[in-house]
Image 1 (cartoon, one colour):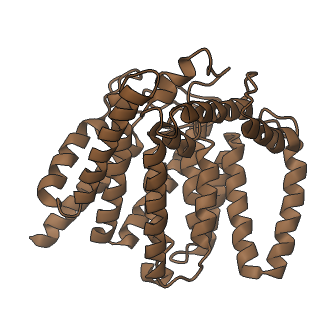
Image 2: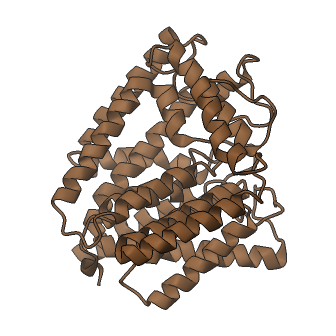
Length: 395
C-alpha cells in the first residue's frame, strides 16, 4: 500500500511538472493568464503545508521576505509607487519549483528525476522535427518561422534544449553514442532556430570540458575553437556586424551607461541592461520592485526600448527588481552549492562551473517566456545536485 501511494504521488508530481513545461499551451486562449499549471499552484501550496511543512519551512520564510521586501521597494522606494502582485507570483512560482526539485529529487531518487528530464528533452526534440516537417502549430501559440513547438517563441525553445544538452555531453549512465546523437539533434534545432547565444553557450561548455580533460591537447583545441569562433562571429549578424560590435562595443556602452536606442537583438539587450542599471542606481540598490521592468520601466519614454518590451536577462532583472535582497540571496545560493560540493565525491570538479557559465549565456537567449520557461528552471535547479554527486550512483 505504501509503495502504491508513493507511485501515485510520483506520477502526480511529474505530471504537474509536465503541465508547467506546457504552460503556454494549456490555457483557454492565447490571451488568458490562467493556465492549468498556475491553477494547480494553490493546491500544491496547501499540500506542502500538510504533507511536508518541515521540509518547506524555508520556502515560506523566503516567500514572506520576498513579499514584504517587494511591496516596500515597489510602493515606497521606486518612483512608480505600485506593487505588481501578479508578477510577484512569478517569483513565488520559481521559488516553489526550487524547493519541489530539492525535496522530491531526494524523495524519488536522482536517477528517476534525471530520467524524467531526459525523456521530456527527447520529446521536445522529436516534436521539433515533427513541426519542421508538418508546419502544424500547437494550441494557443503562434507558429514561427523556426520550430517553437509549445513555446511562445523559438528562443525560449532553444533555451530549454540548450540547458539540458550539457547533461548529455557528460552523462555516463546510458549509451554515450545515443546521448551524443540526441544532443546533436537538439543542437541542430537550436541552429535552425538561429538562437546563436544558446548555440555559443553549448560550444563553450563542450570545449571547456575538453580543455579540462585533455589539458595540453584540450588547450590547443580550445585555442583553435576561439580562432574559429572569432571568424564565425565576424560573419554573423546579431545586431552587430562583427566581433567588436557584438561584444566589445556593447561592453563599452554598458560601462559608460550609454544606450544605443537603435533596435536590434544585441542592442536592445544592451539597452535593457543599461536602463536597468540606471533605474537600479536611482533606488540606492534596493531595487524597483517585482515586474516593474516590464510594467513601468520600459514603458517610460526615458527608458523605452526600440523593439523589445522586456529585460531579456534573468539574472540582471531579478537584481534590478529586488536589489540588495537578491544579491544576498545569490551569495546564500553560492555558499549552499559550495557546501554540497564539499560533501560530494566529484569526478569532475569543474563541470558544474562550466555548466553555470553555460546557463548564464543560455538565459540571455530567452525573450517572452523569461519567467515561465519552467523546463529551463527545473533543469538548472536539478543541476545543483546532479553535478555534485558521484556519477556512478546513477547506474
